Structure formats: C-alpha cells, structure tokens
Length: 252
View (cartoon, rainbow, N blue to C red):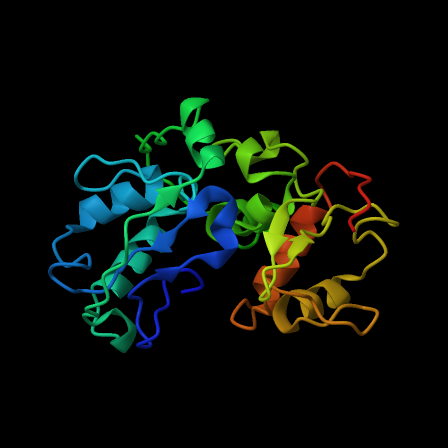
C-alpha cells in the first residue's frame, strides 16, 4: 500500500517520489483492471513476480520493487488471495502509470550485478512463533523487509542472504521525508550510543507500533507507525535484533 496506493483510494499505482535516486519511478497499478492492472495474471505468475522480480512477459522489474524470496509460501499465497479478492482497494482502477525512466545510477546497478532472483525449488516455511529469535528474523528480513532500509545501502543488499548486506541493520541508508529532504535510516543494532542498545523491549515495541521513541520524540518519515504489527511480532523482532552483530554508526 505504501508504494501502490493511488488517489482513488485503490492500489492503482503512484509516482514514487522517495525513489528518485533510481530515476522517475512509478509504482504499477495492481488492481483487477483487465488492461492496466493485473487481472490477467495467474496466481503462479504473481508468485513468480513477487519472489523473483520477473513479470509474466519475462521482463525484470529492477531494483525499486522489493523482491520477497524469503516470504513464506503461506504469506505469499495470502497476498495473492487478497489481490484476487473483492476488497475495495483491489477493484479495477483505470489509472495507467507511465513507464519508469531509470537514472544513471539504476542503469549502473543493472549492469553491475543486479539480476532476477531464483525461484525457490523447495517450500518456504516460516519458523514457529515459539522460536522467538528465528521468527523475529523471518519478520525482519522475509516479511516486513526491515533490513533493506536499515542497512547501509540499497545497492549493497543481499536478498538471499540478508546478513551479508553491507552495514546489516547498522543504518545510514539514504531515504527521503515528505518534503523530499534526505534522511538517514536508524541504526537498529544494540550499540548503546549510536543504536538502540539502551532501549528496553517495551520502548522498542512502542516506537515500532506507535511511533514514539524513548525520549518522547516521534519517528520521522518515511518510517511510519505500524500498529497492525502485534506485540508478539514486535517482541520477536526485538529478540532477533539482540543477536545480530553490533555496529557503531553515528547517524545524522
């Protein structure tokens, strides 16, 4: 929704102002419109697109659309079921988005290693919720894609082995607020001075779900409160963050 929400209240696509480093980028219409939406996609074609980044015509969608190779089959099927449902947000929208105009940076990435991800040849199953650390990792890297913003650079991510991403959860990635000012993602490792090592679990849950940090300030865009994340999920993410290597990285 954050990328694809349109002015008509549906998922008809929109200009992605915060992706300007990649060029003039538009999120696609993913409603059930037969011509400009995804009504013609089969479940399998949608699954392949979401996991690998390759659409039904064999075209790779680089690199502004996140790929979800680690999302569990159950969660993937649920997303597809929603897109095929009678929910108002996915009913046909006639908004047709322009073709993207990639920047030199985006073209450079495409020529220096970015390529479609392989489709899994085995079932992808989420860890049990009882294993809090493993489940927290699944949420942080497979389902909610937290690591991509909170690592050092979109260009230095490893979607198949997220831990190999540069500055994994150490923050500093360039993002944009609502006025298109540059902001830098926060360090979410347990460094006590530059990260969140001095926070409590309760403070982390409050910041993640409701946008209030321990010092009373609010998290700033593009990060938004996520009240639909449950306490159980937020606590699992917190448990996982306790286990990753600490990075000292002072964020402006």
